[in-house]
Length: 159
Image 1 (cartoon, rainbow, N blue to C red):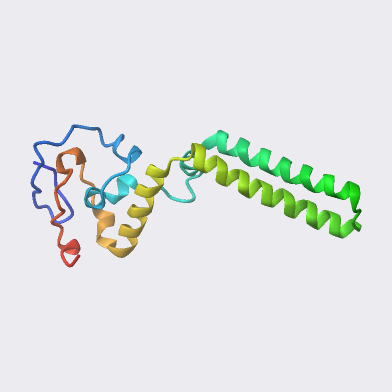
Image 2: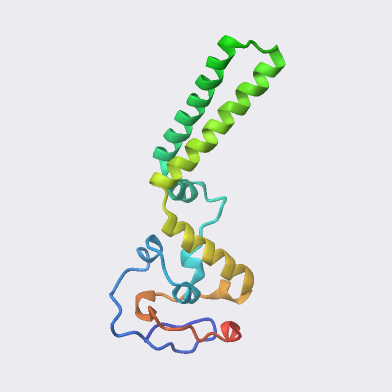
């Protein structure tokens, strides 16, 4: 029916579910009960740079970050024209303005171009994998069949 879970028992299928491939499921925000069937499918490691970069918004967010850093530097350099600073203060304040501008630019870029749905799914997956270590062994496929069906794995029973 809906595939096998960790303890090899059958799950009921949802006959009204719209068919989707497993690869397309993490691209839209999903209910926690669906992610519980295979949290590994939705998981994104922080060390997986290409996926993390895509979730943040890719090159568009990077461009916003660069523009924010340039704006921060420009803003501070305009101030220095009127009130000069010492060498060390100038370096420290220049880098702090660049960092502040780049941080704001990254935030604006993520809000405009980032994939908050995939980030939500990855966050829920990470929390499930930490709270229920047995869920690391789940590898169910065709998850579209169990949309809206509560998981019946033994280690999820107390929740």
